[in-house]
Image (cartoon, rainbow over all chains, first blue to last red):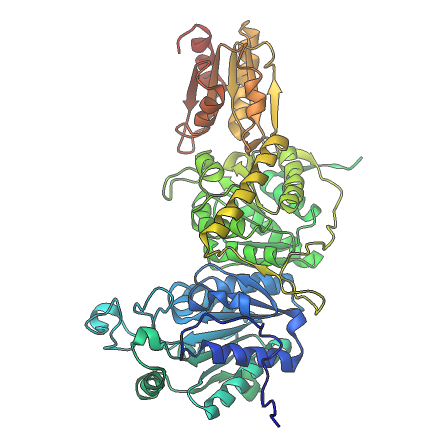
Length: 250
Length: 353
């Protein structure tokens, strides 16, 4: 007798994902889809895909989708949400999209308290274009465009997005999570669900930063990538809640 | 009969858009379009609409993309440098087949240029508003009343063809006051079945997208879009002709410069010179038909523009070397005078091309 322990969430379409083996996008997609299913909101949800590895997310989520220009997902999501306030609107953005080219749109959407959710994948590298330095690339980290390691004197310092946004009035929830083990996956899902619930309650801008891996462009096996994440990413990007208006209210 | 009111061009743009059922405006401050946004910020909250000042033109055009993708009537207004910043977003909007209205109240350029009226964004509006193969419907009003009328048409045609439309105004038309009759308010029904507005568990998911990684697919979509453009070229060309039927010297001029040209034609006629005017109302599609029918009888064409010579290239392409096509323009925010244009007419009428 076989027993089905877990099924594909309904909000995730039955299509092959293009992501590399060991990439954590798949896990995060699943978590977002599970939350959409649990809240019963697929019919009124509009997702905004951003430029980068996750651009094809519009083929994967079952809800309506809009594809935004690079960095502009918060502005596009603002347009959707202002046009259709009853819809639930989320962006799915990588670090290059959200924290480099789209930092202006991100900070201003946050400052307006734009009632949207940003799912922010921080894997410290540009994946889609083949592994260039990202705004979140760690000091000393080797990438295609920092072949001798990121020299912060030349290439600047990595940006801690949740810490930065925690100072912005208008942000309802800024939480950093990761998906390297079951315990953290569960915590990540809880955070994502809270973000969607906050939007439905009209609390304002919510960002869930997911510290993620890119085994292909890091040049590691999936297992080694997870360990590298724990050893190098998490000390610079500590997990935790950086702002939560719900807790402040209590 | 609706009441006639005296309105500033820019404010009339805003009120006409509201009458056309637009309830979503996203913009960023820039002179000389300022009054459009200021008017919208006053009116929209009173009628349940959305006025949002974005952090940049880059953001505002992408808010337009989002709202347009969600299926509502939406617009932005800006002036020349703002269009340059919006050009990426406009390309995505065209590539995603999203209708919206973009108003450009032109000022002099290049660079920061000046804030006085200009027509130097003709190339940008009609040929290369952004990267890739696409066009917008571009309307060039010459009076405040015509601005009002064209805004309604621009929204309707944008929805019909699922494409961005532009009103190419300028600092002169935007700032002057004229009597206008506003149209009856429209309430466009929410019929955009392709829009990303939540499928309500009643259909598959809609994707509003401009990415097609397979070249065969992208080429096919571009071919289809250009088939649509060909139909638009057939059916949507608009121009006004003034004393052109027997004219020897035919001026081609749009917007503010056409008003000057109109006066110059009258002055020339008083002197017994057979001058006429063709005033393009659509800049894209360029009103070739209206020009071609006068090629046989005209001796010479003169394109009068507030730039260094942009539309003149389309006039030349249309006339196909069958007759001389000359150019007269002022630029940098300078407006030609009727006397200056008359001098050109007299010169050309004398055979001095």
